Length: 213
Image (cartoon, rainbow, N blue to C red; front, side, top):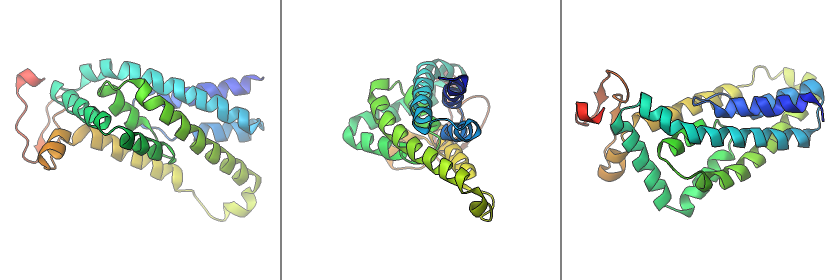
């Protein structure tokens, strides 16, 4: 097996190990498959393996990173969200599967899971099923597009990578800036921007005291 497949692994790993949304890892898989004419199923298997290892490492280190850059109150808020996910059992599993089946960055999901100290075993099996399925579809579609490029070029610029990145940023912002305890316990929507340094709050949340920092 050639070095090109190693690039598939490294590319997928790097896309999914960082703590901020990038385009879905299948984009680098599609690019390398087309560029080198690689076997499509080996690309999918190796790429998904790289993604899973990257997400696993992300969930391991993100709690330590979160403790250093976010205020104590924000970490406790996301941990509360994680507890609510676990209490919902199979319903949360279905929601995670549905999300991973979409061609969207899964960084917000793993950022929340890591900050909430959710056991990786709770997320990884469902993530594997959804990731393998969605990436298999996406890579095959990419191969089809490359083989029918002339008839598709007339369609112009594709909005899907851009829209997926924007949606990923929206989901990440929701995890970080929504006060989830106020929303779930009090049914009150509050945006809290005081999660790291000096900032401000929109809504009825009380100011965060120094002991929460």
